[in-house]
Image 1: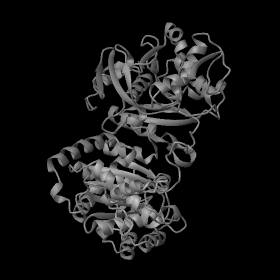
Image 2 (image 1 turned 120 degrees about the vertical axis):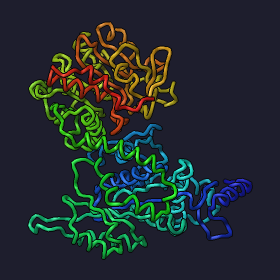
Image 3 (image 1 turned 180 degrees about the vertical axis):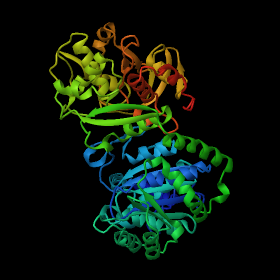
Image 4 (image 1 turned 90 degrees about the vertical axis):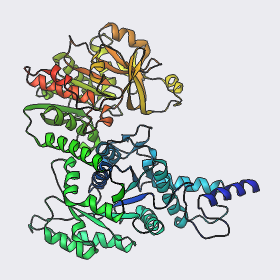
Length: 607
């Protein structure tokens, strides 16, 4: 039981933070050092249906403000009770995006990182499960001083506290708050109430609300109908929130009549109703917003004009428009790349891979046709016929045994036929298995994830190595240093074109991991003696992290235990994907000078 002194200490702490005390009903949780008015908030909410692109809209608008020199901190607030996204099925929720600090999050965090070119942390993501756990843990320890703990004010108070703490921690001028799902979802009701309270407490010109809605166009009618959008916005207004900006999703540009109806029934000026119709690339949306004046509208509503850095904005605009010009320009080099995984039916499961390839295609002038092959539906013997049309192959990550033998057959085909290959996580591990079986003559080689009785466990679960890093045998998650060996393909890809640090044995890079199994050190010597090169490893332990084949035996064969796709950005494409696309271009057209392509990577930001 909490002691009298503990209760007094807790009361002092809560009072200091603006929490509720014994003799007061006042509950306005504010972190120590928080200055009211210093931080502004933009809240993005969805109506009608989920999946409208709230993250795309929010990150695009956030980018415009960051371009102006403002400090930005986005946060995604999910309604589900999961503590993080690590256990979510990709078919239900898309890919799991891993932050540098190891948190497994919603794929929208990847959108924010790519468009803002900014690494996020666990402070930029929360779920109902996290909120409830914090409140209940505090209640169990006597943190509420015997009060009856309720949704209002305690749960909503925790939401407000986290938002203000994020603003303080990341010194943000503007916090962009995206609430998952729609305003009609029961699990979102406490978020919406907390945000209403936040706007009330912060005062005028502190919080701006954006509502995404959807205009339908039934084929039988041949015109856009806004009634569903109107009803969705009405639901939001019934919750006490008056939207300041409305983004209207539609397949085609939203007609003026639909915009006028939406504006009239939501009390939003027509100039703040933005047509967010389908576009060829999400990266064109920031410029469309700028042209419509949304950035200026936000500055006015939040009284931020005096914080704008005009020089910074001009430089950022030019840099982004150069990228968009490349994105929209004619691309002379046509190539085909295959993605062979078990979630091929849902492209959101590999969203970051899709974007990483798009970044590279834009910079290298490649017109890439992507084909997604489900390895659970193709027998190993049918792989050669299925892959012969491709100029490059990516075997992505995944968990579980399904489709792995077909993945191994894909890798064998690429190795023997000199097709450019990039293996990611499981694709790295299966490349080790394939090489062990077919080159080292270890016919029973396998991963103990799939065959615990194998006589040649070249991929194994090594808890003693995990304990060295303090991971206690759990998954290896987040950003880790990788020591790159000089005079290798990996060194050529990364050196001078990536954030790297000098090391006595080469240099180190930082990439993000999400896996449990490693190359068993007992087999490393045999694998290397037969020609496999481990060009990246843990700086201190015998943990292999990059593999490749010698240049004289294969034009481009490389694998990474980490997920390189998670760190690719539009203006800073990821080196391994750049190498794959360049090699695929040469595979399609042998006359292309691949070396010149690789040496022209001044497009990257150099550290």
